[in-house]
Length: 237
Ligand code: FPP
Image (tube, rainbow, N blue to C red; front, side, top):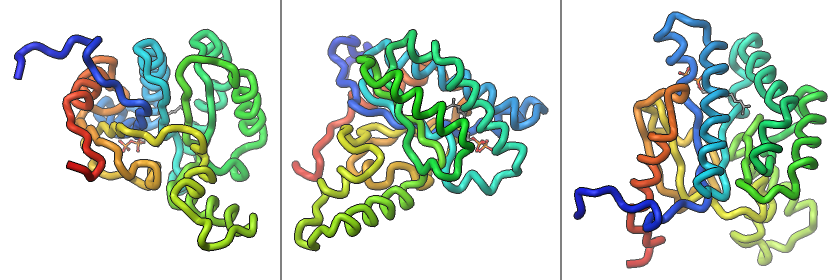
């Protein structure tokens, strides 16, 4: 094996990178700051990483911003994360300038109405953008997504023999997108936490101890180099 890193041009990039943005709370705690400061720092990292990923040619990225389980957090923290999301959506130049196509995945019924409207507007405004397709998972849970898909399939009167992998995929929030082939989780946790559980069947994983607010382009580069080095066989030989 060469001692030199692969030339960037020889590198195989994943088609779809999914990130669990974990460690905001611990980052804040280490600095004797409130958890809200951790989410603010995490939000900045999110914007920097999305911009960088778009620049280097990643086609699809999905980030976990708020899970179906996160409602159990103190109301003030839930409000804080919703506030960060609201601010991001109001500052539409963020993604317009970057040519990033935005999509939100997860159930919207439980979200504040103004956020639902801002989400719909951001999706509409960016629908023809040709840069990276960025999914932001809000009130998202993988099991909830599969249950929702099954309900739609049954409601459409589908015969059991017509239920296939493809049909289920087509009824998920990520319909029409390639499955994530690379999942990144920082902060020293080694779990999927109900994230893209159907779509990640063949994904490669990359874990790191770095906390999300400290995750920078160099960590993404390190992860992408690792992805490129892996021999992907999809169960074959
Ligand atoms: C997990 O860290 C992080 C969250 C539940 C929230 C992530 C949200 C953001 C980074 C803001 C996203 C904003 C936009 C605009 C998409 P944690 O709080 O569980 O950290 P801990 O495990 O250290 O406590």
